[in-house]
Image 1 (cartoon, helix red, strand yellow):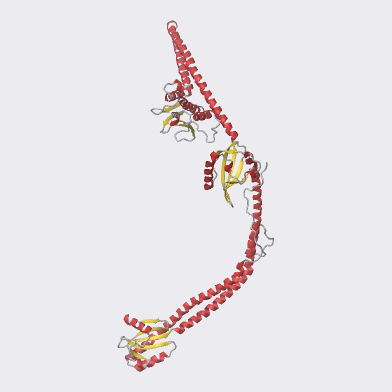
Image 2 (cartoon, rainbow, N blue to C red; image 1 turned 180 degrees about the vertical axis):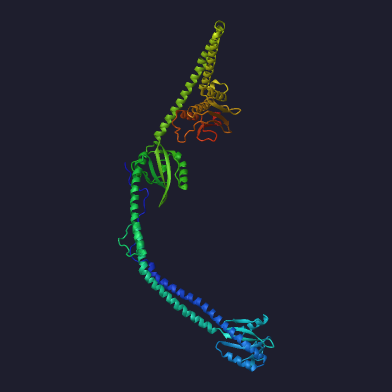
Length: 613
């Protein structure tokens, strides 16, 4: 039975890439350059117009200021000398200068003192001078005769200059601004057109050079890059020793390296597929809760013939329904965290309805199509059966050992101890006879009696250790106290006991198992750990009863296999028999090693099942 070739990570088909031709950008570049040139001409026109107009205004302003100041000096002297005709002649001469529109002398009452037109003399300036000229004059008078430098409106530049005359008077000079501004605009248009055209031609020439030297070669490199993605690289390489030729050669070398790496990846994928197919465990890949790959072992575990019977179906079709909710929760955690899930034990249902117990490990990976889950299932049916047989054997060994220990304890207590007591009584009777007939032997007889007394005590200690709870009427606490005393005597170690004031009532078999666990811990501490001090502590919490046995002997190695020792196996079985939890503390804060056995209080006094009327 062999599965068909189902790709673990199918790659998308290559995209068809057109070869040859120039990119549309090459044909749109002239239009872009033309639009750029027109935009540059418009920008330069606006910018240069503003700059040239500002320059023209400054030039006219400076001319108005210098001319007005110079004329104001001469007019002031002539006005002191009352040379009105000379003033009018001078004003007429300046009005003939190109650019001068108006020249007149007024007093602080805005009456015209002297003008080129003789008819204006002595009349108010309000009806004769333009409004913008009067506005500048009014501002001068308001600002306390301060010199107002040239100010302009849309038509002219106006300057008002105080005269050094007996009476306050001012010289008003207006110069034309329209003509300089018009010339500035014309110059800006000419400059913008000439510079923009030159730059446009330079850009066009540069484009032609770049198109022939760079663009065509870059287009060739881009075509090769597209061909690499399609797996069809041409053999013709760029010639020359420039940077673009180097890029093309590097591109081809990269393509060669990628081709070799792709071949290696395909080879690795083939080896990975062979390895997956040869694994003695089920391996399947699921995406969006649908199986898209499964190996041959998985088909055999499910009792299937071909992959078509399971590909495209949900894993929940063969996972036992009792595990569906836990599996869904684990899948959500794996996909959310992007990590592997710890091994868990589950059950799967084969096609014939039989159930297999499996150990499942799930991990998530990502590819071009998104996230997927890879699941590995090991068949542990035989292992679980072996564990069950071992558990049953352990329980049988425990029960048998308990019965034998109880029987031997009873024999020691009821038979051997009685016989030894009788021998002791005989020796005491013999001592009375020796006192009369052989006083010299009294010391040896006393020593024999003492040895018999020690033997009887030790034998009774052994009997209590073999059958503790049933012998001692006081229950677990008295039995543990006896265990501590006998351990001191028999093992020669310092043994300490800590008990609460009152222990909860418990069934005899539970007390016996607690005692046996403590006894095994003390024996192991003395035998294997070489511990000089062993501490037994029984504590009670609101919910549980805890027995903790610690020692300061040799610590147990973290790498030690605690599943091999028969004593540890029996301790586990004893704990399981009373639904207790057994833990090994490898590095406790108060000792070298400790064993902790905890049983819920609810297990000590189980409630009887309600009777059905």
